[in-house]
Length: 73
Image 1: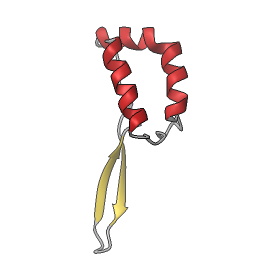
Image 2: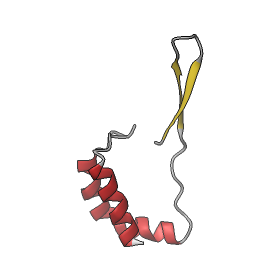
Image 3: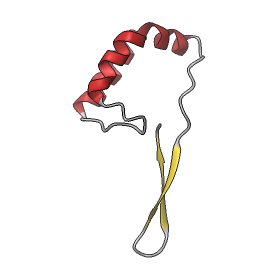
Image 4: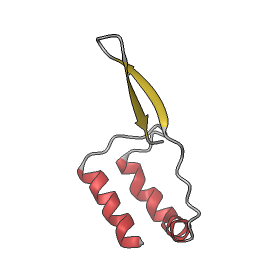
């Protein structure tokens, strides 16, 4: 719902969340939400929202192995 979306935004802002791979910053997010909030909430309520797939990245470890990370896109 609208309150949940607002709370999520405030948590990201408080944590000084980094830009995603789409380069959208926390400062870009508020105008985006203002413009798209109605459609976003409707798609969530109707079960139609589909998040983008997680980007898989392997980070080399000093011992020669790799650390697998999933980065939300």
